[in-house]
Length: 363
Image (tube, rainbow, N blue to C red; front, side, top):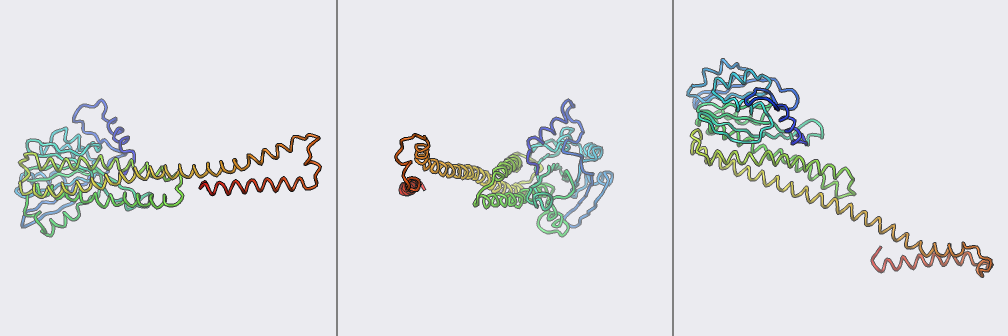
């Protein structure tokens, strides 16, 4: 996941400066991924599945009694997305938001459909940082009377189990409408937050272990970096809970009352996810305080040691300074044992001072 999420969003917004509302332009990091379209059309008794379909193949299914699920992976083909919007009657601002990946999770209700935006989180199984990074992408969902449209930034998602349940006719999916499919998608998105957050938890534990020894300055940088990531996760997950809550509370004709019951479960899971995020936020704040305390204590120990050494040498410096004045009439200068006696006296003074410091608890 990009650490500087807010900077990324500002860059995205800058690309649209001066353009009229509804402009069909991809707004994201780098070049968009190639667009591939997959189709699943099903009823309780049969299912049809295709990959790489064209928009012309999908048009006859728009008004069919079956449930049609069109999934767009990649946002490079702006023209196809525009034509899709014309076929399904999507508002230009909805199409604009689909191509603008910096959207905040939200729900918007229109006359014939509902538009939702959520963030999908992944555990980074490869790449830098040995798979510890959490990556994300924007998922746009359009719920219609008998269809569901999903738009992803790139190939790959967390919906493998949903597709398997449709193929094998398991659960309620084949017997329910498109609103239940949207519920299943939201449920899978929210449930996948947990393994993604486990990666964050692993990194928090790694920092704790590194702090149990002598912490290095790099630890503080890692803590601040992880705090920024958790903050960005919070900004992505918190509105997702609002989206699910809005589907439950608002009077949406496309969402059946029976589906609302299942949405409560997703809402409960989103609250659990937020609890985990808040826990990590508190832990990282505590780790920051612990690190600063450890550094301060270590500095205090160093200063105490240096102060004790300097204190011991104060009387010794006085003695050698006294006998370094080179006066002619100094009785000890002519004594045979004056030099070893002075060294013995200096050693005795140092030992007495160390013993005194120990009894006072300063050592």
